Structure formats: C-alpha cells, structure tokens
Amino acid sequence: MLFFFSGVSPKCTDKHFFFKKLYMFKYVCATLNIFMLVNTIITGTTHGIGIETARVLALRGVHVIMAVRNVVAAKSVKEAILKEIQTAKIDVMELDLSSMASVTKFASEFISSGFPLNILM
Ligand SMILES: NC(=O)c1ccc[n+]([C@@H]2O[C@H](COP(=O)([O-])OP(=O)(O)OC[C@H]3O[C@@H](n4cnc5c(N)ncnc54)[C@H](OP(=O)(O)O)[C@@H]3O)[C@@H](O)[C@H]2O)c1
Image (cartoon, rainbow, N blue to C red):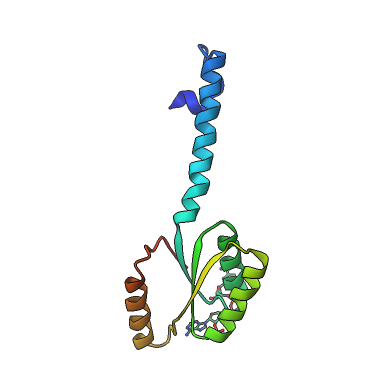
C-alpha cells in the first residue's frame, strides 16, 4: 500500500512504474464512476443554495431528487439545469417539511421508488 502512495520505491523498475500508473488511473476512474450510482435527496431546491447544490451534484453525475413544496417552481429549476447539463438525472418529489403527513407520504413514495439513499441534504 505504502508503495502506491509513496514516491518511487528503491526497487522500482519501469514495469512497476507502469502498473503503479495503471492502478492510479483505475482508482480515479472508479472514484468518478461511483458518483454515477449516488442518489441524493435535496430539500429547498427552488431557491438559493439549494439550486446550486442540485446543479453541482447533477453536474457530477449524481441522481438528484428535488424534495420541494412548490413543485411548479422546482420543475422550472429542473428544466434550467437540464438545459445546461443534458445528461443530468433529476426527479421532483413533493415534500412540505412543515407537515408530518407530507413527510410520511414523501418517505413512503421514496421507499417505493427503490432508489438507495446515499446523501440527504
Ligand atoms: N451555514 C451557512 O453558511 C449557510 C449559508 C447559506 C445558507 N444556509 C442555510 O441554508 C438554507 C438555505 O438557504 P437559502 O439562502 O438558499 O434559503 P432560501 O433562499 O430562503 O431557500 C429556502 C428553501 O427552502 C424551501 N422551504 C422552506 N420551507 C419549506 C418547507 N416547509 N418545506 C419544504 N421546503 C421548504 C424553500 O422552498 P419554497 O420555494 O417552497 O419557499 C426554498 O427552496 C437555510 O436554512 C440557510 O440558513 C447556511
């Protein structure tokens, strides 16, 4: 392990160097691809910091679920993000955090969707 993260090993040959680079390349690819499998629920994505968080995570390939009370506003934000990032994976789901009934309904719909939850914001 130390061999991969330290500089050049005293016994390092060209062959070792090649495999070290290959290992690092695979590691970087795997790290980037992990984002393709990540699902996130973000609240407050109709204004301010919520929009930017959704946009940046979508840009990184994360599947963004916009949990909002204003579905119409969220759909227009979704369209704006899709205009910029055609590959973005975004869903809009209704959630009013001031209503326990809405929270329960949202949770049950999310569980039914079968998506794993990796990040909750
Ligand atoms: N720690 C920091 O440095 C820092 C910096 C910036 C912001 N913040 C915090 O981050 C949060 C967002 O900031 P912001 O400036 O982006 O706020 P904002 O512009 O006021 O946006 C708030 C968002 O929350 C949604 N929301 C409000 N009540 C809701 C409810 N009952 N159910 C569902 N959604 C609801 C709003 O949706 P509607 O469209 O339906 O109103 C809106 O999308 C705030 O809590 C703020 O204090 C922290």
